[in-house]
Length: 186
Ligand SMILES: [Mg+2]
Ligand SMILES: [Zn+2]
Image (cartoon, rainbow, N blue to C red; front, side):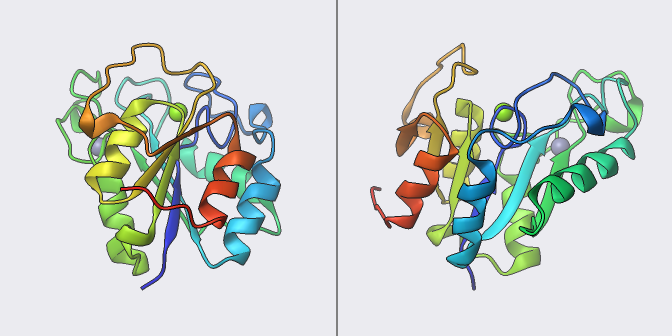
């Protein structure tokens, strides 16, 4: 069993361009390369977990996400993402097959639990990093510690015990420092 760092994509690993799947418009967030490199060196699996309701809404086909993953792998090279999980669903989606109340759309933990099974991940030693409280909640539901990158993307601040981040930071470099310093807080 290995630990993992679960990463939200939009607004965390990359600057958020709503519903964008055009590879050329994807760039990495500040410090992403260094932060992920250090985490990978320390033995953490790097797993992206991303809500992609644009599929259910009919904005782009599910296949377009393959190009997104490929672009991320190219930008991060030689660092490798060990997994790229996305939820294509939305309960009010326009496309029938994706209009479901699923258990993978964050704040649910389905993507993390699936990744844990497929990659032999020890969730109790793992972390979730995201830019909104739905990421935090998904991480907590999976039994991980959570870090909120407080960069202004969370606007509703519906806070309760299930959504309280273990740590709040300004960027990915600070998030990686917390993880690498082995800070524990339950
Ligand atoms: Mg996000
Ligand atoms: Zn889903």
